Length: 329
Ligand code: ATP
Ligand code: MG
Image (cartoon, rainbow, N blue to C red):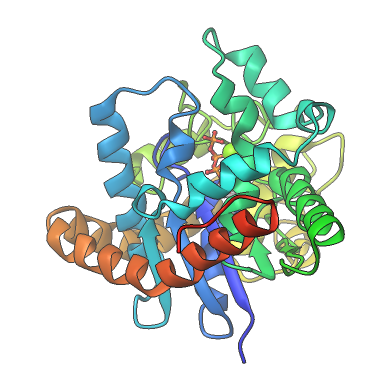
């Protein structure tokens, strides 16, 4: 029996190189080894103010990019979160299992709250919905970037709490983080993580960026005045470029440092940009195909949700009954 794996990205924007290196690339490697389930977390996108047409477009684009990056619907399930009611239903039940103080400790909320003019309750609540996303499937493996570690911890806590209080019900999920690339930083502000929801995209590489845009963004990436090409805490910009380069060329950071020994930042930037462009070329071709063949995507999504709905819906029913709700007979 394969273990169940679950992961998702929210269509608050277009997928970035951070999403790819921290998450999606890993998913593609793992889809053979697990009972793999991926969703476009569209409900999570409503936690920040977003125009309906933008959300719609982003949702299509994230789905298309999943396929373009190599998720194969013959090997894994891909669907839109809002097509499976079990997510929101379990989300509510978990709201009533989570302490306010626990939710209030989430660093991602605090960071996002400072950037936004309009802070929605959904933004505060989203780690709880995320716990529901994982636990309705009894996912044991959750491949994510470092930024999601605290949220995954909450999912583990809620699963354990429920099991202790109501009897064994959930499997306890484990986070899987890439060794290199688990956190890719903004090229203009390399102490802040690269995020698809950032309005200013000058430090963000989008999977859809054209080659000349990629080259220009990497050329302008912040480095520092010291010219050595090494990964270290006091050189966040250079470290970030080395991380991207290493991941895309299958080198260790040490090997990348040796490769660039004695070279200048121009060479580091040019070769990193080349590696990004090369990696994204086939992805962009497939992306364009799916964006012009949406019916194919929707058929995959429908098939996907049909495969997982029964298990997830049943899970919610079990939880409701254990919590004392009367289930319809
Ligand atoms: P948002 O700004 O809306 O939160 P995001 O870019 O953080 O967007 P998410 O949808 O929150 O993307 O996350 C999708 C996946 O990508 C998660 O597994 C997350 O850990 C991973 N991820 C996001 N940003 C990075 C990054 N900069 N480096 C590595 N992994 C990342
Ligand atoms: Mg995020």
